[in-house]
Image 1 (cartoon, rainbow, N blue to C red):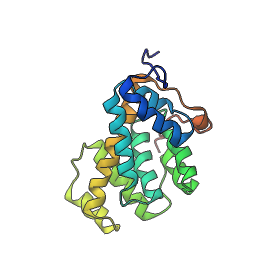
Image 2 (cartoon, helix red, strand yellow):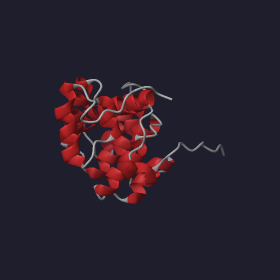
Image 3 (spheres, rainbow, N blue to C red):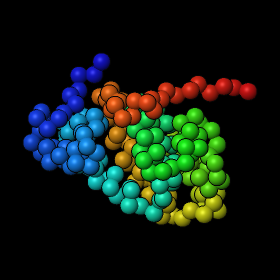
Length: 188
């Protein structure tokens, strides 16, 4: 069991209180992840800013979900997979996309599959992707900007996924119905 504290407005460091108030206004409660990040005010601030920047990127809601969940599933984040499943539902993302990501199956379109594949390649290989991989991504209709925006999404997810692993962040009540565990792959 982790000894990390999940802060609220009373226990948070002074520099985090305004950030947590923003979370409270935005979500109607303080997500446990934000409460955990509040221990390090600059980390909470960075997370919130990167999140805002990534949602303002050129990706649509389906694509944002593909990037987030590809990374969440790869990192086996017990907190972020259910959280982003709920977020995807609130963003009207097709459940076929979220289920494919959660279950490790093919995306419903070739373009989203190319995004998933590139996101996974960047994550697994720490940015070391081949020219052939890049060309395949570009041939699917994406650009250099999209490659770099994946890195922005990855930056956000490293903060949240790694924090959740260390803190063992409890899943918030609104996300509990989307609880997730990685399925073992079956060899043919």
